[in-house]
Length: 324
Image (cartoon, rainbow, N blue to C red):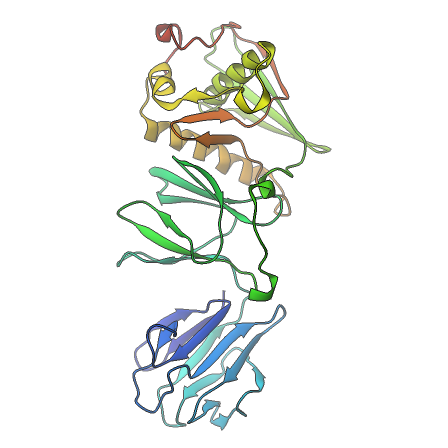
């Protein structure tokens, strides 16, 4: 993402897609304290191809010592030096002009900004309470213990103790009404499990569209196997698709002998595994669905080979094994 640095204070700023510099704290993303600076002095913004500066002040904005014509759009270059209100004011140097990325801006003091690429968890990988990933339609999705939502600029994400504000790398004139239907256009996915007789070893392959990926054997595949079995059983019983496969999280914790945080870590590890094998042009397929106090496997096109073929019975928790 684009960055500018104050050469006097060494303060470095990551530019938002439309970043306002000015004296007024409620309207400016970066507050300038000089009395010569206007309330909304100038903005730097991404037009889809390049970063532009536009002055809207009384005392002017200077790039490399030359005043920018008020109201016009001035193209920025790496190394440009920007000064607000005076050619003798503090210098802000343009350090990077990379295209914008969606961003988590810290609300809680002491946190770092997080640039969003393909997958993020909050507050940390060791305690993944909230997961963010991109939907097939290119919108960022937040998955938390209370469910799944499509994010829009300004939404708060995180936990009660650590909070960020989501800023989308999308120009304001591209903003559109977001619906949960944005989550439904995933490519067709089918899952194949190979399970040893004692169920100590679970391998997984998945096919997405015309491409097949072998994820090999991992401990966290057993969790997915349990959830997939539950969905298959509910489908065979004739339950309607929206009600298939849901498992109470407390019940699942007892079945696995793990707490909820450990289960979340396993789900995150599976998602990281998907990110590592998928081409960068692919969006992350949604593997787990959530609603209040329950989760389920996202797909019903599943084949299981081997294993004990034991039914998932929440009334007989001792029948299931623990996975470390």
